[in-house]
Amino acid sequence: MKNNPGGNRVLLIKLWNCLRGYVIIKIVGPYGERLINQAALHGLYLWDVKRVDKDALLAKISVRGFFELRPLARKARCRIFIVQRRGLFFHLYRMRRRQAFILGALLFIAVMYILSSIVWSVQVNTQDDTLKLSILKDLEEWGLKPGVFKHNIDKKYYLDKILLNYKNIAWAELEIRGARVIIDLVNKEMPPRIEDDTPCNIVASKDGVIEEVIPFRGEAVVKPGDTVSKGDVLISGSVTLAGRDNTEDRMLVRARGIVKARVWYRKSVEVPLVEFRKSYTGRVKKAYRLKLGNHEIDIQWGDLKFPAYVEENLPERHILPPGLGNVRFNVVLYREIKEERRFLGVEGAAEEARKKLSEELRDLPEDLQVVQKKMEFTLNPDKQSVIGTLMLEVIEDIGVEQKID
Amino acid sequence: MKRTNQEGLKARIFDALELPKDIVLDLPRITVTGKVGAFIENHKGILEYSSDRVCINTKLGPLVIKGQDLIIKSVVADEIVVEGKIRSLEFEE
Image 1 (cartoon, rainbow over the protein chains, first blue to last red):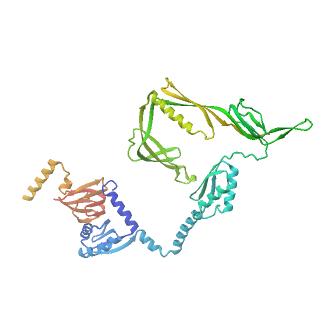
Image 2 (image 1 turned 90 degrees about the horizontal axis):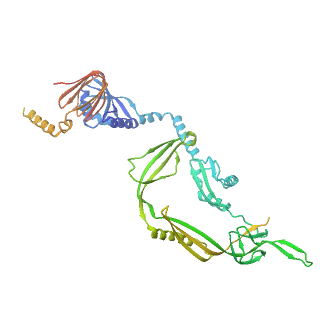
Image 3 (image 1 turned 180 degrees about the vertical axis):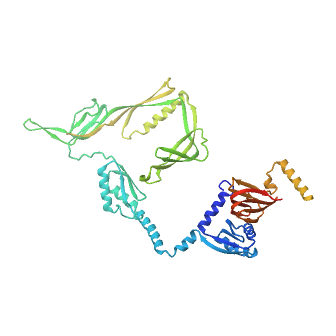
């Protein structure tokens, strides 16, 4: 009787009774029907009523219901007997005698718990294999290795240790996922350090016209007014030593000095005359995405009513362990956006371009000296936009060290 | 006699208003599933029960379900589920 309206409720009651325990009773008496009516009127739920004899009925009732039925039975002049006790409660009750079984079940749970609170593997996520191996080795030394209890892991302690001992790691994160410890690392690119006594040249880092050369050590190769291009030697680390007897000797030193040069920069931005601006309205709809292999199932309530929206995928999660199948799950947020069109006009666009270029200017390093700056705005008729060009003439130190081979 | 007149008036009013009769007139609602089950709402108690005959009291008088191996699957205050091989349902006058 699945399609009747009360069916679901009845099923639920039955399930509940199976858990709580129910009894099969025998109702003996000429007016068994009367007792059933009385029980129904008092809100007691009877089910599977079966006639076994002329004046005997079998019925099922919950344990609590049975005790409430007894006074009613007296009134209806019936006698009731318990034929059988059923349900989880009685099963457990009977189980009390089977102590070894219970012990086994408890042991099983305990072992499962212990095994799942042990770290089974330590994983370091980084591209650098040697770094990975060395970190794994160090972690083992510091006490983080397969076999330790995961509840005792002090994340901060290990992260601090890693960051202190490895100077070339910029960021580290330790995550305990199930029985795995996952360490994510981000490497820092360290500039190659040149030791103080290695012979070096000072070379140009960019094209320019030399303004000033101040060699501290080494020989200046260029003079003010010279045009240099990137990579040219400015101060040589190879010093000529004039000997007493007119012989020339060369010595390699580490050149140092300041080489200031006039350098030109050009930067352009394009601003369209009609501006599209997207802004979030703040309305968000959530959907759940289930991925079974290559199939995707979206689960969401109601339709997406936003005329324009951006889809944002939150990180995926594997529901099952990777060995059991590729089932992933993630939450998708649809954020409603509003698109606005604004006609800037030529002046407006030029103003916008000027603003953007000014921002660029602000980002320049402080130690350079701006000699001249010029902004130009041209209209690009095909693309309906204004192109702003910034030309900068600055004086800056263009020297960088380069090792002499 | 007066009572039946009243009832008739009531029925006519509810007819005009198109209200569901089983609710306003307190009539039983019977759902029969093939030959295997009957679901009776708005009953007034079980009058008689045996494996080949179930008699259920309703406002219209006793409803007799005849068949074989009939069992009362569940009973609550306002609904009864009867299952088994049903042969006939009949209102006894």
